[in-house]
Amino acid sequence: METVVSGIRSTGNLHLGNYYGAVQNFVKMQDEYNCYFFIADLHSLTTHPTPANLHGNVKQVLVEYLASGIDPEKSTIYVQSDVPEVTELYLYLNMNAYMGELERATSFKDKVRANPDNVNAGLLTYPVLMAADIIIHKATKVPVGKDQEQHLEMARTFGNRFNRLYNNDYFPEPFAFSFGESLVKIPGLDGKGKMGKSEGEGNAIFLSDTPEAIRKKVMRAVTDGGPTVENQTKPQEIQNLFDLMKVVSTPDTLAHFDNLYNTMAIRYGDLKKQLAEDMTIATAPIREKINDIANDAEYLRKVAKMGEEKARESASKTIREVREIIGFRKF
View 1: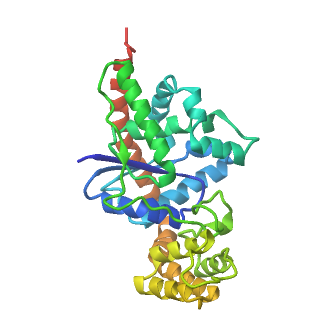
View 2: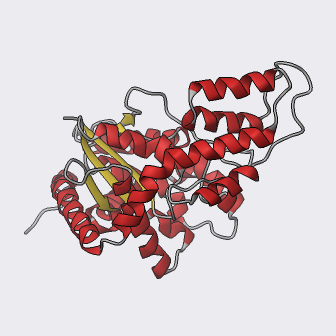
View 3: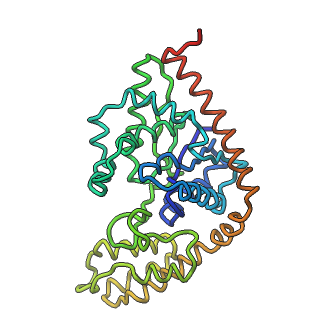
Protein backbone atom coordinates (compact mmCIF):
# COMPACT_ATOMS: atom_id res chain seq x y z
CA MET A 1 0.00 0.00 0.00
CA GLU A 2 1.12 3.56 -0.67
CA THR A 3 1.96 5.67 2.35
CA VAL A 4 -0.14 8.68 3.36
CA VAL A 5 1.08 11.24 5.90
CA SER A 6 -0.70 14.26 7.32
CA GLY A 7 -0.92 16.17 10.56
CA ILE A 8 -2.75 18.90 12.39
CA ARG A 9 -1.14 21.48 14.65
CA SER A 10 -2.00 21.09 18.33
CA THR A 11 -3.27 24.63 18.80
CA GLY A 12 -6.70 23.84 20.22
CA ASN A 13 -9.91 22.14 19.23
CA LEU A 14 -10.48 20.78 15.75
CA HIS A 15 -13.01 22.75 13.70
CA LEU A 16 -15.17 22.10 10.66
CA GLY A 17 -12.29 23.17 8.41
CA ASN A 18 -10.06 20.47 9.90
CA TYR A 19 -12.80 17.87 9.68
CA TYR A 20 -14.12 18.46 6.17
CA GLY A 21 -10.79 19.62 4.81
CA ALA A 22 -8.77 16.72 6.23
CA VAL A 23 -10.03 14.34 8.91
CA GLN A 24 -13.10 13.13 7.03
CA ASN A 25 -10.82 11.93 4.26
CA PHE A 26 -8.39 10.40 6.77
CA VAL A 27 -11.20 8.09 7.89
CA LYS A 28 -11.87 7.01 4.30
CA MET A 29 -8.19 6.46 3.50
CA GLN A 30 -7.23 4.21 6.38
CA ASP A 31 -8.67 1.06 4.79
CA GLU A 32 -6.75 1.50 1.55
CA TYR A 33 -3.45 3.16 2.48
CA ASN A 34 -0.62 2.90 4.99
CA CYS A 35 -1.60 5.98 7.00
CA TYR A 36 0.40 8.11 9.44
CA PHE A 37 -1.62 10.86 11.12
CA PHE A 38 0.30 12.99 13.61
CA ILE A 39 -0.38 15.78 16.07
CA ALA A 40 2.07 18.55 15.21
CA ASP A 41 3.02 19.81 18.65
CA LEU A 42 6.52 20.82 17.55
CA HIS A 43 5.04 23.11 14.91
CA SER A 44 2.87 24.76 17.57
CA LEU A 45 5.98 25.99 19.44
CA THR A 46 6.27 28.88 16.97
CA THR A 47 3.45 30.55 18.93
CA HIS A 48 5.01 29.79 22.36
CA PRO A 49 2.20 27.92 24.16
CA THR A 50 2.46 27.43 27.92
CA PRO A 51 3.34 23.87 29.04
CA ALA A 52 -0.19 23.31 30.33
CA ASN A 53 -1.77 24.53 27.12
CA LEU A 54 0.63 22.50 24.99
CA HIS A 55 -0.27 19.21 26.69
CA GLY A 56 -3.97 20.01 26.89
CA ASN A 57 -4.14 20.87 23.21
CA VAL A 58 -2.33 17.67 22.20
CA LYS A 59 -4.81 15.65 24.24
CA GLN A 60 -7.75 17.49 22.69
CA VAL A 61 -6.62 16.79 19.14
CA LEU A 62 -5.93 13.13 19.97
CA VAL A 63 -9.41 12.78 21.47
CA GLU A 64 -11.02 14.45 18.47
CA TYR A 65 -9.04 12.40 15.94
CA LEU A 66 -10.40 9.26 17.62
CA ALA A 67 -13.93 10.64 17.95
CA SER A 68 -13.93 11.51 14.25
CA GLY A 69 -13.37 7.88 13.33
CA ILE A 70 -9.61 7.44 12.94
CA ASP A 71 -8.87 3.88 14.07
CA PRO A 72 -5.51 3.36 15.85
CA GLU A 73 -5.58 -0.30 14.77
CA LYS A 74 -5.74 0.70 11.10
CA SER A 75 -3.72 3.94 11.12
CA THR A 76 -0.66 5.16 12.98
CA ILE A 77 -1.78 8.08 15.16
CA TYR A 78 1.13 9.70 16.98
CA VAL A 79 2.38 12.83 18.67
CA GLN A 80 5.12 14.52 16.63
CA SER A 81 7.39 15.15 19.63
CA ASP A 82 7.28 11.44 20.54
CA VAL A 83 9.35 10.73 17.41
CA PRO A 84 12.77 12.43 17.85
CA GLU A 85 13.93 11.07 14.49
CA VAL A 86 11.77 13.79 12.89
CA THR A 87 13.88 16.56 14.43
CA GLU A 88 17.07 14.82 13.34
CA LEU A 89 15.89 14.71 9.72
CA TYR A 90 14.76 18.35 10.11
CA LEU A 91 18.36 19.25 10.98
CA TYR A 92 19.77 17.45 7.94
CA LEU A 93 17.25 19.06 5.58
CA ASN A 94 17.93 22.50 7.05
CA MET A 95 21.52 22.20 5.87
CA ASN A 96 20.23 22.21 2.29
CA ALA A 97 17.37 24.71 2.62
CA TYR A 98 18.23 28.24 1.58
CA MET A 99 17.24 31.56 3.12
CA GLY A 100 15.90 33.01 -0.10
CA GLU A 101 13.45 30.21 -0.81
CA LEU A 102 12.27 30.08 2.81
CA GLU A 103 11.72 33.86 2.95
CA ARG A 104 9.67 33.71 -0.26
CA ALA A 105 7.22 31.18 1.19
CA THR A 106 3.74 32.71 1.21
CA SER A 107 2.92 31.42 4.69
CA PHE A 108 6.11 32.94 6.13
CA LYS A 109 5.35 36.35 4.63
CA ASP A 110 1.78 36.14 5.96
CA LYS A 111 3.01 35.30 9.47
CA VAL A 112 5.54 38.14 9.43
CA ARG A 113 2.81 40.62 8.54
CA ALA A 114 0.45 39.24 11.17
CA ASN A 115 3.04 38.89 13.98
CA PRO A 116 5.96 41.24 13.31
CA ASP A 117 7.20 40.88 16.90
CA ASN A 118 7.50 37.08 16.69
CA VAL A 119 9.49 36.35 13.54
CA ASN A 120 11.35 33.35 14.92
CA ALA A 121 13.57 30.85 13.11
CA GLY A 122 10.91 28.19 13.56
CA LEU A 123 8.53 30.19 11.39
CA LEU A 124 11.19 30.56 8.71
CA THR A 125 12.02 26.85 8.66
CA TYR A 126 8.44 25.67 9.15
CA PRO A 127 8.36 24.15 5.62
CA VAL A 128 11.53 22.18 6.40
CA LEU A 129 10.01 20.59 9.48
CA MET A 130 6.88 19.85 7.47
CA ALA A 131 9.05 18.20 4.80
CA ALA A 132 10.72 16.06 7.48
CA ASP A 133 7.30 15.00 8.78
CA ILE A 134 6.33 13.79 5.33
CA ILE A 135 9.41 12.23 3.86
CA ILE A 136 10.57 10.47 7.02
CA HIS A 137 7.89 7.87 6.25
CA LYS A 138 8.58 8.07 2.49
CA ALA A 139 5.03 9.22 1.89
CA THR A 140 3.81 9.66 -1.66
CA LYS A 141 0.38 11.06 -0.82
CA VAL A 142 -0.31 14.00 1.47
CA PRO A 143 -3.89 15.16 2.13
CA VAL A 144 -3.40 18.91 2.50
CA GLY A 145 -5.55 21.99 2.05
CA LYS A 146 -5.03 24.47 -0.76
CA ASP A 147 -3.05 26.77 1.54
CA GLN A 148 -0.47 24.03 2.17
CA GLU A 149 0.25 23.12 -1.44
CA GLN A 150 3.29 25.41 -1.55
CA HIS A 151 4.72 23.67 1.53
CA LEU A 152 4.24 20.33 -0.19
CA GLU A 153 6.06 21.62 -3.25
CA MET A 154 8.92 22.63 -0.97
CA ALA A 155 8.93 19.13 0.56
CA ARG A 156 9.47 17.73 -2.92
CA THR A 157 12.23 20.28 -3.46
CA PHE A 158 14.08 19.32 -0.27
CA GLY A 159 13.72 15.59 -0.91
CA ASN A 160 14.91 15.89 -4.50
CA ARG A 161 17.79 18.12 -3.45
CA PHE A 162 18.92 15.50 -0.92
CA ASN A 163 18.74 12.85 -3.64
CA ARG A 164 20.84 14.93 -6.04
CA LEU A 165 23.38 16.00 -3.42
CA TYR A 166 24.09 12.43 -2.40
CA ASN A 167 23.48 10.88 -5.82
CA ASN A 168 20.93 8.52 -4.35
CA ASP A 169 17.30 8.18 -5.41
CA TYR A 170 16.19 7.75 -1.81
CA PHE A 171 13.17 9.96 -1.11
CA PRO A 172 10.10 9.55 -3.33
CA GLU A 173 8.12 12.67 -4.34
CA PRO A 174 5.00 13.36 -2.26
CA PHE A 175 1.94 14.85 -3.94
CA ALA A 176 -1.32 16.39 -2.75
CA PHE A 177 -4.08 13.87 -2.30
CA SER A 178 -7.75 14.25 -1.48
CA PHE A 179 -9.00 10.71 -1.99
CA GLY A 180 -10.49 11.33 -5.41
CA GLU A 181 -12.08 14.64 -4.48
CA SER A 182 -10.91 18.20 -5.01
CA LEU A 183 -9.02 19.78 -2.11
CA VAL A 184 -11.57 21.33 0.25
CA LYS A 185 -11.24 24.81 1.71
CA ILE A 186 -13.76 25.55 4.45
CA PRO A 187 -14.44 29.30 4.88
CA GLY A 188 -14.70 31.00 8.24
CA LEU A 189 -17.54 33.08 9.68
CA ASP A 190 -15.64 36.39 9.60
CA GLY A 191 -16.38 37.01 5.92
CA LYS A 192 -12.73 36.82 4.89
CA GLY A 193 -10.67 33.69 4.37
CA LYS A 194 -10.59 30.10 5.58
CA MET A 195 -11.89 28.80 8.88
CA GLY A 196 -9.08 28.77 11.44
CA LYS A 197 -8.26 28.96 15.12
CA SER A 198 -5.88 31.88 14.77
CA GLU A 199 -8.47 34.14 13.12
CA GLY A 200 -10.48 34.56 16.33
CA GLU A 201 -12.84 32.46 18.45
CA GLY A 202 -15.96 33.45 16.48
CA ASN A 203 -14.50 32.51 13.10
CA ALA A 204 -14.51 28.73 13.62
CA ILE A 205 -17.11 26.11 14.50
CA PHE A 206 -15.39 23.52 16.68
CA LEU A 207 -16.37 19.84 16.68
CA SER A 208 -16.85 20.05 20.45
CA ASP A 209 -19.05 23.19 20.34
CA THR A 210 -22.47 22.87 21.95
CA PRO A 211 -25.55 23.53 19.82
CA GLU A 212 -25.97 26.85 21.65
CA ALA A 213 -22.39 27.90 20.87
CA ILE A 214 -22.85 26.99 17.21
CA ARG A 215 -26.03 29.07 16.96
CA LYS A 216 -24.41 32.08 18.60
CA LYS A 217 -21.39 31.99 16.29
CA VAL A 218 -23.40 31.50 13.10
CA MET A 219 -25.90 34.23 13.96
CA ARG A 220 -22.97 36.65 14.37
CA ALA A 221 -21.48 35.71 11.00
CA VAL A 222 -20.71 38.65 8.71
CA THR A 223 -23.34 39.49 6.07
CA ASP A 224 -24.26 42.51 3.93
CA GLY A 225 -27.42 44.49 3.19
CA GLY A 226 -28.73 41.88 0.79
CA PRO A 227 -28.85 41.59 -3.02
CA THR A 228 -29.87 44.67 -4.97
CA VAL A 229 -30.50 42.98 -8.34
CA GLU A 230 -31.61 39.50 -9.30
CA ASN A 231 -28.94 36.84 -9.89
CA GLN A 232 -26.13 39.10 -8.74
CA THR A 233 -22.74 37.65 -7.84
CA LYS A 234 -22.52 36.94 -4.12
CA PRO A 235 -19.86 38.93 -2.22
CA GLN A 236 -17.30 36.82 -0.39
CA GLU A 237 -18.92 36.98 3.04
CA ILE A 238 -22.21 35.67 1.61
CA GLN A 239 -20.56 33.11 -0.66
CA ASN A 240 -18.76 31.81 2.44
CA LEU A 241 -22.10 31.01 4.11
CA PHE A 242 -23.34 29.24 1.01
CA ASP A 243 -20.08 27.29 0.79
CA LEU A 244 -20.56 26.16 4.40
CA MET A 245 -24.14 25.18 3.62
CA LYS A 246 -22.89 23.18 0.64
CA VAL A 247 -20.89 21.03 3.09
CA VAL A 248 -23.36 20.46 5.94
CA SER A 249 -26.81 20.87 4.37
CA THR A 250 -28.80 18.87 1.83
CA PRO A 251 -28.68 19.88 -1.85
CA ASP A 252 -32.37 20.83 -1.65
CA THR A 253 -31.72 23.19 1.25
CA LEU A 254 -28.83 24.82 -0.57
CA ALA A 255 -30.91 25.20 -3.75
CA HIS A 256 -33.79 26.71 -1.77
CA PHE A 257 -31.67 29.49 -0.26
CA ASP A 258 -29.77 30.02 -3.49
CA ASN A 259 -33.07 30.64 -5.25
CA LEU A 260 -34.16 33.07 -2.51
CA TYR A 261 -30.91 35.00 -2.97
CA ASN A 262 -31.23 35.11 -6.76
CA THR A 263 -34.82 36.39 -6.51
CA MET A 264 -33.88 38.99 -3.84
CA ALA A 265 -36.16 37.28 -1.28
CA ILE A 266 -33.35 36.09 1.01
CA ARG A 267 -33.59 36.66 4.76
CA TYR A 268 -30.14 36.17 6.23
CA GLY A 269 -31.58 35.36 9.65
CA ASP A 270 -33.42 32.35 8.21
CA LEU A 271 -30.31 31.27 6.30
CA LYS A 272 -28.20 31.42 9.45
CA LYS A 273 -30.75 29.52 11.57
CA GLN A 274 -30.86 26.73 9.00
CA LEU A 275 -27.07 26.66 8.69
CA ALA A 276 -26.63 26.47 12.48
CA GLU A 277 -29.17 23.65 12.73
CA ASP A 278 -27.46 21.65 9.98
CA MET A 279 -24.03 22.19 11.58
CA THR A 280 -25.41 20.95 14.91
CA ILE A 281 -26.79 17.79 13.31
CA ALA A 282 -23.57 17.17 11.36
CA THR A 283 -21.35 17.40 14.45
CA ALA A 284 -23.62 15.61 16.96
CA PRO A 285 -22.16 12.07 16.64
CA ILE A 286 -18.59 13.36 17.02
CA ARG A 287 -19.48 15.62 19.94
CA GLU A 288 -20.92 12.68 21.90
CA LYS A 289 -17.81 10.54 21.34
CA ILE A 290 -15.48 13.39 22.33
CA ASN A 291 -16.97 13.49 25.82
CA ASP A 292 -16.64 9.71 26.30
CA ILE A 293 -13.06 9.38 25.01
CA ALA A 294 -11.75 12.46 26.88
CA ASN A 295 -12.55 10.76 30.18
CA ASP A 296 -10.75 7.49 29.34
CA ALA A 297 -7.14 8.28 30.29
CA GLU A 298 -5.97 4.67 30.05
CA TYR A 299 -7.25 4.32 26.47
CA LEU A 300 -5.55 7.57 25.44
CA ARG A 301 -2.23 6.40 26.92
CA LYS A 302 -2.53 3.10 25.06
CA VAL A 303 -3.27 4.81 21.73
CA ALA A 304 -0.40 7.30 22.10
CA LYS A 305 2.09 4.57 23.05
CA MET A 306 1.06 2.32 20.19
CA GLY A 307 1.31 5.20 17.73
CA GLU A 308 4.75 6.20 19.02
CA GLU A 309 6.10 2.68 18.59
CA LYS A 310 4.74 2.27 15.06
CA ALA A 311 5.91 5.74 13.94
CA ARG A 312 9.39 5.31 15.41
CA GLU A 313 9.80 1.94 13.71
CA SER A 314 9.33 3.64 10.35
CA ALA A 315 11.25 6.81 11.21
CA SER A 316 14.26 5.08 12.75
CA LYS A 317 14.73 2.95 9.63
CA THR A 318 14.77 6.14 7.51
CA ILE A 319 17.26 7.86 9.82
CA ARG A 320 19.62 4.86 9.81
CA GLU A 321 19.62 4.85 6.01
CA VAL A 322 19.91 8.66 5.72
CA ARG A 323 22.89 8.72 8.09
CA GLU A 324 24.55 6.03 5.99
CA ILE A 325 23.88 8.00 2.78
CA ILE A 326 25.23 11.24 4.26
CA GLY A 327 28.39 9.50 5.43
CA PHE A 328 28.01 9.16 9.19
CA ARG A 329 29.87 6.00 10.17
CA LYS A 330 30.60 4.24 13.44
CA PHE A 331 34.27 3.62 14.23
